[in-house]
Amino acid sequence: MKQIQKQTDVGQVLEALNTISRGRMVMDWNEITSGTNPYVVMKTSNIPGKSVIEIPGLIFGDKKQPVKKIGVGMTLTESVIELASAMKLDLIVVHHPVADAASSGGVPFSDYLPLYNLALIEMHEAFHGLHPGMTFLHGHRKLKTDIAFGGVPGNILHKGIALDGIKTAGDILERIHRLMGREMDDDILEAERAIRGEHSLQEATLANPAQLLSGTVNSPVEHVLHFFPHTGFSMSNLETALDMYPETDTIIASISRVREDHAFVDLAKRRGLNFIVGNSHSVELMENGLPLAYALEMLLSDVEVFLLRERITAVPLKDVGHKVLVDYGKEMAETHLVTKQPQAVQFL
Image (tube, rainbow, N blue to C red; front, top):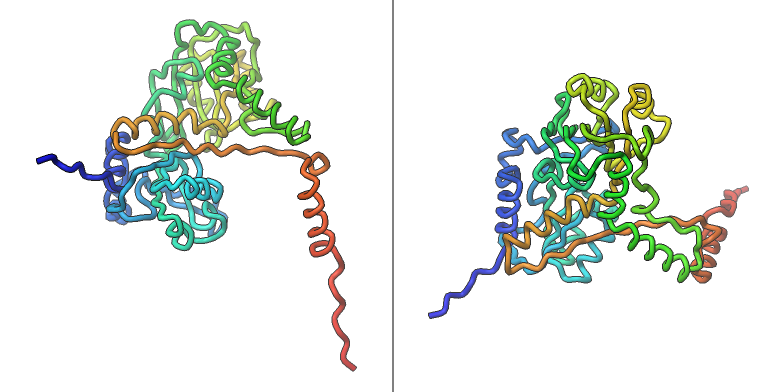
């Protein structure tokens, strides 16, 4: 008698993610109340009501819900939810923490996700440090990683050594450009500009290219420090790291950026170090999301996995090309948003 294979469900996907993350996922909500999972982390800027708790695990849905199609993305937005709906996905796995309304078009998950029978899992800190891809793309092999540098959870520092073939700062810039496929994105943007008639259109993955802010393209590279400014990495952290690794000749800041006048860059210049800003946050889907998607596909052979890539563009209002929508926007603004309010009726 032929054995019927059991269909994959959300619970099995969660177990696969727990395997991938080496046991970091929340498998039981008691882990949250007991404080036993170090990857359950509060993120806050101390703005009342705007904090979020990262919970690497199933945020919404039923563990027993069948899964045939999974979408892997970086950040949950209403656009991602609507794409998942159109593709009839069963589950979305996102890297970044989610929050009611902020991640779902201003409404609660409980009102939105059931419309499309969508389950939702987040990972973030539970995924960091599991693979060396980010350092590999930036031309160095990590020798040591601290995911809580200075005692701050999520404040990541990689100590690395240049890969074979990487001799100069220019080699790193060329490697990033080539591996990330910028030529293809350039071609897509040029085609969109022509089609829309919006020649000043900008796109997120191209607007922040890798740049050399200290040193020259011929400056030698061997010993690398690689960190991410948006994690809270401070000047004090950088000075401590340079004291720990005095052989450092190159500093790489990626995912988030600093500008030319930042104190980090000034310090690098004063010490004669290379300072490179690498890939921006807008391409982390390829750095972290793509490896995760392939890992899920390898562990769950009967499930189809999709990469959910959100593309963000910007154009000055004066250059918006679709006349019908331009007329609509102007009419709504002029007629309903900027006209004088009616004066109060006077009763005699």
